[in-house]
Image (tube, rainbow, N blue to C red; front, side, top):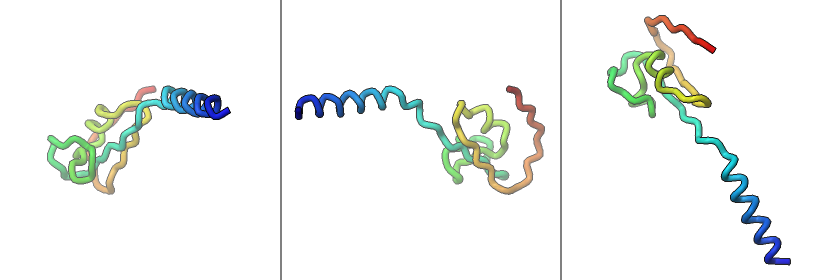
Length: 77
C-alpha cells in the first residue's frame, strides 16, 4: 500500500507541475524614469506605458504609478 501511495503522490506532483503555465511577471511603469529601465521593480520601472506593453507577455500584469503619461496607445485584440 505504501508503494502505491508513494507512486500516486509522485504521479500527481509530476502531472501538476507539467500543467502549470509559465509564471506571469509584474511589469512596473513610473513616470520620470530613465528610458533604459527594464520594468522589473519600481526602482527600474519603465518611464512610459508603451514600452511596458511591448515587453509584456500574455498573463503579465502592468502596475502603473500615478503620474502624467503623455503618450497615445492603441490596443488591439
